[in-house]
Length: 392
Image (cartoon, rainbow, N blue to C red; front, top):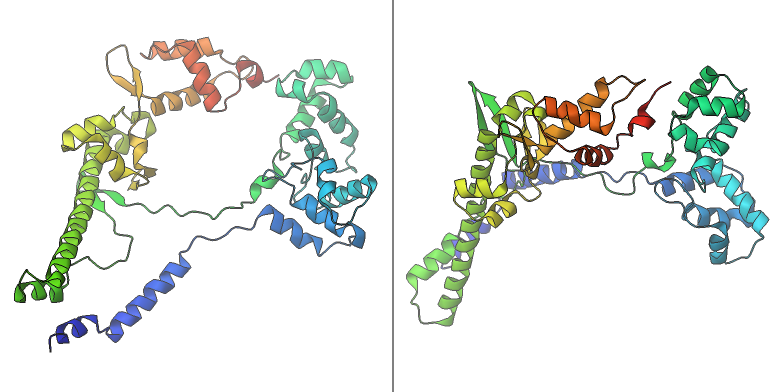
């Protein structure tokens, strides 16, 4: 009789089994997919081409010596040393040519020039010119010295510009379209909705786990038994631990909710208008407002995402430093980067702005920023220098 309640609690109803199966099926359907790797793609093509038997091992070793960008990561002199059956270097080069004939075009190249040349069609009437540009003028192309290239090659400037535009359509990293890692799904823990003229914050439970509770059987056991025996003390200790865990989870959720509410309150302009309205925000400031230690805020938002009308963001995105305007207000670094992008996008491409001229435009708008800071963020954003941005 003493165990009747325990058994009744652990009996699983058919509806619960059905629900559990549905949850498992949903989990399987939503599991991140393993993308086909470049190596798998190349090995799959090997079965479709005629490879001389004595080159099979060499071809496989070459494939597994190709890095994620599609380049041969090790010299053939090294790859050949790992073959069980020795072959000549000429055979090794032939094996490489076989791999370089596979998809994607440019795979198995040993350098950038070879990668781009492998993507050319030898039947193209401009093949020789493009090959010459890649072999002998790649640095000048990068610096956009088109008039100099035209003089060196004896070609018209328009012809050079046209071929350079074609070169820019080639893929310098042919392996990048493949991925060896599992594709992650970003699932937000917090959702922000605009309802009746205000932003509302909701916590999202994505776990599909039952709510944690203390077993009524063990609670009853403690109430009906004395506190002297070892079993009683053991169960009491475990229940206290369970209570602590439940309270800790509730507290973590509570902190996450409070922090999210403060982010929404302080970053309302961003939610209304976008990235250029993102304000500088320190984690310590939010911790002070919420009334917890800054480390508590850091742990609460770690690897957490928030869904907003502007998109899904990692919560730490909203904690950003900045730069002081001449009027004393703060401009976030994200806002600075956005403005930098817009200034460069609108410039005269035939006479692009220098970093000092960009800095001057910031000063006119009220942000006193140094040229070296512009240079730093331009490089981070992978924006070319004014010389490289010039169009002829």
